[in-house]
Every structure is written in C-alpha cells, then in structure tokens.
Image (tube, rainbow, N blue to C red; front, side, top):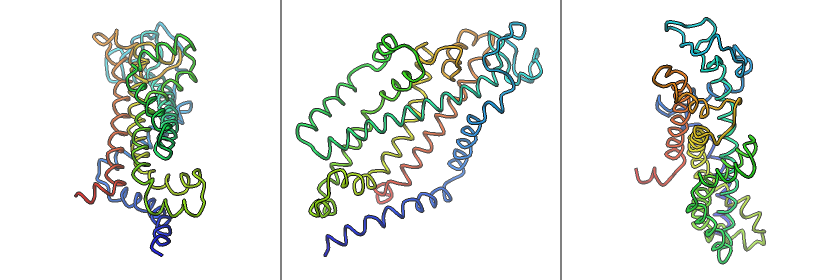
Length: 302
C-alpha cells in the first residue's frame, strides 16, 4: 500500500512544478523581473531584425566609413550606432549579429543538453561496463582542449554555419552527462522506481515517465548556464576567426574586427561587446534564480 501511494504522489509533484515556477516569477525581485524583460526584448529584436534594420547589414559605403554614433561629431543621419571600417551600418549589423548569436547559442546548447543528458541517463541507469565506457568518453572530452578540436574540425569540415553550430554543441555535453548521471544514480533505486519496475515497465518507459520529470529541474538550470557559456564560446571563437565567416555578422566576429580600432574608433568593438555582456549576464542571473527556485534542497537548508 505504501508503494502504491508513493507512485501516485509523483504525478502530483509534476503538476505543481509550473505553478511553483510561476509563483516564483511573481515573487522574484526587481532584478530578475528586469532580466525577463530584457531577455524578451532581445529575443523580439532578434526575430524582428529584418523589420527593425535601417540598412542592409552587409552593404558597404566607403564614403561613410568610421562614422561615430549619434551624439558625436561626424555623426551621419540614419546611422544610429555609427559605421565600421567598411562603412556598414553598425545598428543593422548588431541586430543581425544578435539574431545569429542567439540562434547559435540556443541550438548549440540544446545539442549539448540532448547529447549529454542521453549519455548521463544511459550511464546512470545501466551502470557496469556501459557506465565505464561512457564516463571514459566524458573524461576524454574534459581532457581534450576544445580549441584544438575546433581548429581540427574547421580544417576538415570548413566554416559552414551548420558545422560551426555542431562544433559549439559538442563543447559542453560532458557537464550535462556528469550532472544527469549523478541525478539518475540518486533515484535509480528509489522505492517508486522499484515499484514501477516490478510492474514490468520497460527501461524506456521508466526513464521517460518517472525519471525525467524528477531530474528535469537541474537540467533546465544547467541549460540556462550553458546558453551563457555557449554565447561566450561562440564569441571567443569568432574573435579568433574560427567562427562564422564574413560577411555574416555575429557579435563575436564584430568584436574581433573592432579590436584593431579600439584606440581611435572604440564604438566598432564596444557596441557588440556590450551586447554580449548583457546577454550573458541575463542568462547567468536567470540561471541562479532558477536554481534557487527549483532546488528544494536549497530551500530546506535556508
């Protein structure tokens, strides 16, 4: 009887999660609410980039090159954030750069989450030799310098956007694998899992219907941190010239090209760099808040 009650309690816990999260949003402090507003604004701007842009982001005009932003001497009407070394409108390029950077970050982090979570679940649930092999792959990933792997992949497969997104997605899967494996190990032999296993449920059903709902919170929190890490990683690789190649604009590549003009025309590099800072900071703060909201153990310790 006790086992049956334990099994029936699990779905109720799942149903309370969305309302608990919504209550957490309403009771969050002003900084977290501001982060939500900024995130929604940035995503909206990225989606509406073709509508909001005032110029073709790749159109060059050497007669308008190196113009300062609005409010400075030499400002050219219509170029709100100035122009770069080729006369391209920085405002329009930042809009499209934000779009590509968010796209790469979200898809890349989803690849990491799916790959790492799958490996972590298989390793934690089955254990034994499967656990040893998969955790050995995780150790290799951790020990292998990612920049070297990115250089090798770019040299072999080229710098196509799809290839770059896949490379980004292979950067942090080991973090998901280790965290998910630990979570699965902690509930693998729990009474409600044993009760479901006795009924003859397949491993796939046990994982999908009974394990995933109980380990979803740490995965979501880790994903928010992962998005921020992927944004910084993409920016770093693009800064080094390993990312998306010109003329496609990303915030990292724009910052990289602007480094040669920091002394004389700092707006070329500082505008996209500041945008990267805002995006990364928003995801980090939201990740901290999600961890505090969804992690019951932290509340018990408080």
